[in-house]
Length: 234
Image (cartoon, rainbow, N blue to C red; front, side, top):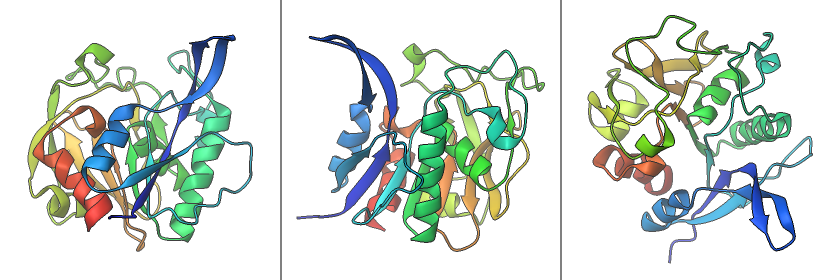
């Protein structure tokens, strides 16, 4: 029996319950199924008002997608395109990344998590890709298209991501309107879309961590399987 434990961050959402609309910590069950299918169990890590978070017993971390990161986290004023900001989630997940780096816990950062990994390392974001001139590809597809391929990505040679997926280009989904602008320290770009949007980053200082802009939890394909194999079985 595999006792490997993946910790997965969550957002909050109002859920209709017997007592009315209650704020709950929620996680897409696809994450749990994919981890289980690759031999791991899951611990859900909700938002918490704590300065530090103990990840003892956690073998790998997934920082998930969600609303926009507060631009104050990268020293910018918020423009009118920014939506669904949650300061408690920002601070919780920044603390998770700090603890994961300190303990060298293998980390997969997805979409918002990918962007937050960059912010954690001192980078900045495009608050809106269209406003920044990225109009060739529609990156902000509706959730109805979450399980469909939207565009391809080009993977940089000799990167960790290339070693994981064993491919230099493949199709991905796309549910985001923001993207990485200035790259943070200890990071390299591992993938881009054809219009130049950064779709993959990875840490270079010894911490086993990558960020990807797409949502593998909605896909059942070979790159997704290989990413989970890296996270859990490598």
